[in-house]
Structure formats: structure tokens, C-alpha cells
Image 1 (cartoon, chains in turn green, brown):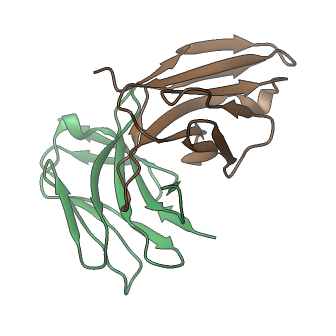
Image 2 (cartoon, chains in turn purple, blue; image 1 turned 180 degrees about the vertical axis):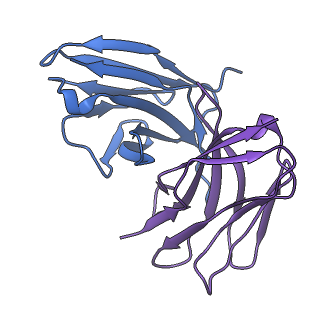
Length: 112
Length: 114
């Protein structure tokens, strides 16, 4: 079946550092790919998405490119802020009914 | 526009007790979902609904039942709670279109089963 694998966390960085969170997937067909973010005590909210190969999703300085050849959708940000501290989830859309399959999540902490 | 709301926010149950979690959305979305979130495992789909009066099983449906009697509400029931059902439960909703739409999540319900 379809699955998503994210890099192990937690990840701790200093403010203004470069961020990469790796995400790879296994899927049949051509799923859409997503990054969701969960701030402390809140539900998940969409950060960015890409619906086909070579698409780049971007939002709030974060970017991720849908790489079909490497089955990857790595999340990057050039200069992180303390307010980016959260748990980040990579996900793909499963067949039908817009179901999502999530990775295990990566906890990110940014120190001032 | 409240989006997706969940009640209660937190609940403690004893093994064998029953309860119902309520999810409500005011965005007129056709699709609704229940997930559970456990440490190190991301979110896993319990049940989902593609419209009023319809439900389907997700990845981890055992021990749960659901109902969607009204389009805006999606109920998750635990008939006989077990400690393994201690988790954080999230409800989500999405529009029905021809492409993959964003799912909107509620704030979650934290359940502890003793």
C-alpha cells in the first residue's frame, strides 16, 4: 500500500539556520503531496502542496518540490524563525475519497 | 465561520465505558474524516464519510463506530473503551471536487482510557 517516510526527529536548529526535512513516499499512480504543520496544542493546517511531478509548493518561506524520479518531497526553508517551531507532517493522497496517508511527523524546535 | 470544531476537548474514561466524540463543520464540506494521532506514528485514518448518510472504514477502524446523519456532523463512538484507544483524535473535512482538496482539521480531542 501507499506509505510516507519522514526523517527522524526531533530536529533542533538555531534561528536563521537552513532547514531540510526529508520525505519520501511509496505510491501507485500519481498522488498529490502535502506538508501539514501542527503548532503546539492545535490541529493540523496545510502548509503547502503539489499535485503533479516537478510542481513546487511554497508558503511562508517554505518550499517543497514533487520529485517523481526520487519519490521525494523534501521540505526546505532558507532561514528559520522561532515561530516555526512545530511538528511537520508529510502526506500523500490515497486513491479515492481524498484520503490522506501521513508520515510519522518531525518535531522542529528553533532556538533564539 | 468556526471551521471544524470538536467536543469534548479532553476526556478520561475507564476501561469498558462508552462515549461519543462530536465533530461539526460549517463549510458545507461533503467529506469528513476521523484520525487518531499516536506518538511516532503520525495520523491514522479511522473512518471517513463521503456524504450524508454514508460512512466507510479507514486504516484502523476496529473498536470504533461512526455516523453521519447530518452533513455538518460526524460522530465517532467508542462502545467499550480500551487503554489502547488512549490517543488524540482529530476530525477533518474537505470539499468534493475533481482534484485533491485541502483537508481542514479540528483542534483535537485528547482521550485517556484508564
